[in-house]
Length: 83
Image 1: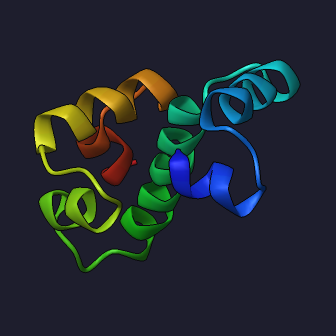
Image 2 (image 1 turned 180 degrees about the vertical axis):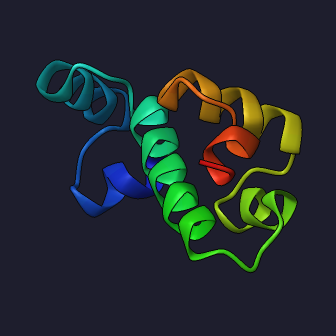
């Protein structure tokens, strides 16, 4: 968050407040939604395992990636892959 705030010349706490106020989600939620959107596009491309994709989009733990994916999309990564 500090890097984002620094780019906008804002205090990190104030930057987080503004994001939440304007977008209705925290910076963390926003970043995870973008990661999952990117993961979805990589899944549709094919040719990579779900473990590779989770690492590519910034998740160190596949289980956490899978839980976040399901929370955001309503389906598991493996179900999404086989649609």
